[in-house]
Amino acid sequence: MSGMKQKSKSVSKADARRHGDAKPADSRAVRTRAQIDSAFAMLLHCRSYDNMRVSDITKKAGVGRATFYAHFTSKDDLLRSQLQRVVLPMLRVQLAEPFLMDCRRFFEHVRTAPHIYKALMGGRERNGIRVIRETFEQHLESALITPSRCIDGTIPPPLVKRFVISSLLGVVAHTLNSGGKTTAEEMQRFFQKLVGSGLSA
Image 1: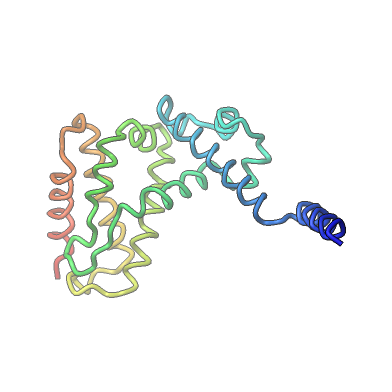
Image 2: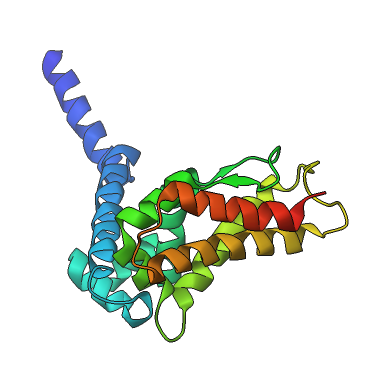
């Protein structure tokens, strides 16, 4: 009887593996994504986003192109994924305030990892900045569904999100160009003045 149970257990384990049991596949997928994420971050230390190819990322991560494309549709998709997972939680939307967002944590991240933001925002084609802008605008757009009393109601929401994110990225570019001497608190103050004065109802 116990021998039968043992055999039954091993058969069901084998069946689960054959039929794609979620647990082993999930942990393998998580490991692979972590390898790709890590390789991408390491490459940003030595080259701009525009000068990086998917083949560079797969080589550094030690995975094949097919494996990369099983997780991400493109290099832009990988960047978008990292921004959503790591950076967006640092941007706290506050619709009750005229400046709409508390970005201190994000600004501190820019100060501690300026090389990454220079690599993302630089380059001839500026594809990195395009992906950052789109991702940040989507983040803010979802919050702007709820009207804010602090915003002049005559300004269309698409214009609001563009203005806010352009101001945010302008503050980041200024900090990167000035050698990162601006503190996160000062960056937030600049951002609040720009956005608050522009959107006030």
